[in-house]
Amino acid sequence: MMNDQERIRAERKKLKNEYGQLFDVISEILFRYDPIRINFDFNTDEYEPEVGTILPGLKDCNSVIDVQKMIHQEFVKWFSIQDAGEENDYKAIAGEVWEVWRDHKYPWIKAEVTFLSTSEGGRKYLLDLGDCSYYRPHIVVGDSSQREPILKEGRIIDEEYLGVQFRSCFLTIAPGESVIIKLELMYYLTVDYGKLIPDEEFTIRDGPKIIGYGRVLEIGKF
Image (cartoon, rainbow, N blue to C red):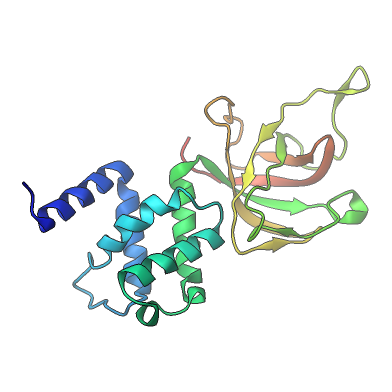
């Protein structure tokens, strides 16, 4: 029968096997930001117990704001409300943890994207990616200067639509603005995203409407 220390080590080993390098990456993030002020340079595994409860909680998070709230709650449980501090103190930590979690969960591309201004036929409103974690337009690989869909028989769209999800983050994008952001390839199990290679251009679609354009800068795991 295992004692408490042996059980804890066994559970930690199981988590490391399940999540691989992600366990160590999140441990490094917590140690670097050191919210409880226990970083003495040599004790780099100090936050591993907290990582052990944060990792399972990430599965229920749908945005970086959810991650911020969940991590703060875990530190309150592990320490105290006084030692853990304010939820807002975890904003930077949550941003990095959310980023590596999504990189772990989905294939992605990093792209420079530009939304057309409203007068050019683009969106009418700000896109708030802090609250809107499910902005899922389509993109079409091809000339980024294209402004009308390609139709056959005058009414049927004759282009390959690829579903993507804009990575949720502390960012708002106005019509007419350009940003560099990660797009998650949500349907990679059934859709071929092989055309999305560095420097490839694309347009962003809202139904048949072209509302923006972009260029692939980097590809993540496929």
